[in-house]
Image 1 (spheres, one colour):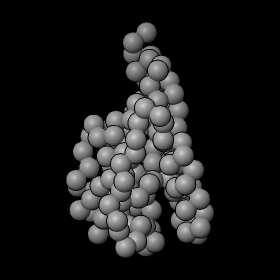
Image 2: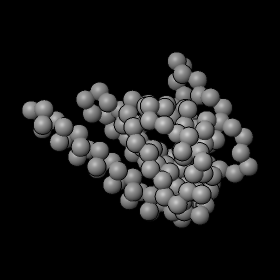
Image 3: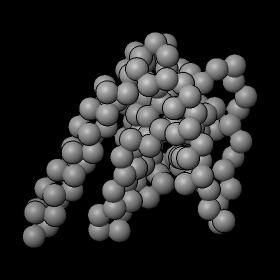
Image 4: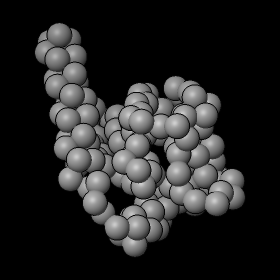
Length: 133
C-alpha cells in the first residue's frame, strides 16, 4: 500500500511539473497587463488574516535574476521568496492530496528566462530556472 501511495504521489508531482512546463510554453507571449492582473489575484489569494505578506523590495522592473535564484532555499515560505525576488509569481497549478497542498508558481522575464518554484504546505520543495542572468 505504501509503495502505491508513493507511486501516486510521484505521478501527481510529475503531472504538475509537466503541466506547468506546458503552460509556460503557451504563455511566453502573454502581455504585461495580463501578468499584472494575475499578480493582483494571486496576492488576494495568498493574504489570510493569520498571515501578513512582507513587502517586496523595490525594483526598477519585474525581473528575477540568477543572484536572487541562488538566495532562495528549500523550506522558505512563498512570502519569503517573494521578498527576495521583489514581485509576486504567477500560480501555474495547485492541488491538494492527502492533506498536502502543492502550488507551483512561475516568474517570467521579458527575454523568456524564468524561474519555477513548487511549494508544499507553503514551504519551498523544488525550484528550477531557465536562462536567468
